[in-house]
Amino acid sequence: MSGYNNSQAGGWSPGSQGSPSTAKSQAAQSLRPVTLAQVRKATQMHSDADWVIDKHPIGQITVVAELFYHAAYATNRNFGIDDGTARMEVKMWLETPEDQLDAIWRGLTLSKHQGGVKPVFVRVTGSIKTHNNKRHIHASNIRLVKDPSEVYFHILEVISTNVTLQKGLPSSSGQPQEQQSTTSNADSHSAYTIQSRPSQAQKLFSPMADEVVHYLRTAPPNPEGIFVGDIARALGCNAMELSTTVDRLIDDGHIFTTIDDSHIQLAA
Image (cartoon, rainbow, N blue to C red):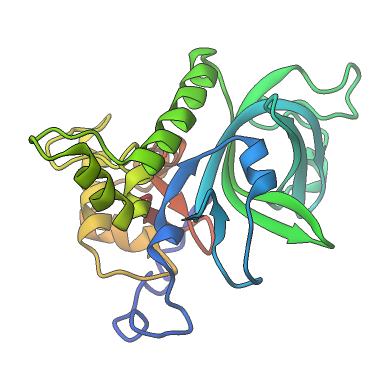
């Protein structure tokens, strides 16, 4: 995650949260695990509308797939990924110094290197975009998958999310399943964000992670996200430790970046 400048303005302003021009749907604040085939089938009514998969609007998506192409440029990186259901291009806007364009990045080799890209899996988090009528994923984060179990976990998470959206959450209080399903579908965005949203009682991997999530949950809503500098000042924490914590929360699917790498939002 990029560093931040404490001199920047805060991540939210009271006057902005009610503006119709910047209001986002609740789906835009969610993170849904998907396959590339689902991304291919996603529809959009118009360029400003939410993307829709199986009649459910989506915001951020996360995909686990094999990397087969990687190219680095001064202002962006392009990737080619294949998860067995489809292939797709991934673009990530990231400035890279000229003397580092040939370097291995986050453990990922470049296609132009001798031997090409190593056969590895990556997790991509981002949103669906189109350019020149060609669909791609605009990545906010991409990382190497180090544990093979994560590939299978992602497949199971996709299946679980789809079943939850179709049939609703399982009843745990004696409520009839049919009624439970109707209740869940009425607020469908929460049906798939529940996978990654920590409950009040659940503890994350560190006390700071708990504090960051609590801050995001209680901060006034802002479609542009919350500025990381505001969180650092509010918590009075070390900038490097906060940056590491935020990166881990992004990797684990609890939060995602919004307008840039220094503004974040809860995936719920």
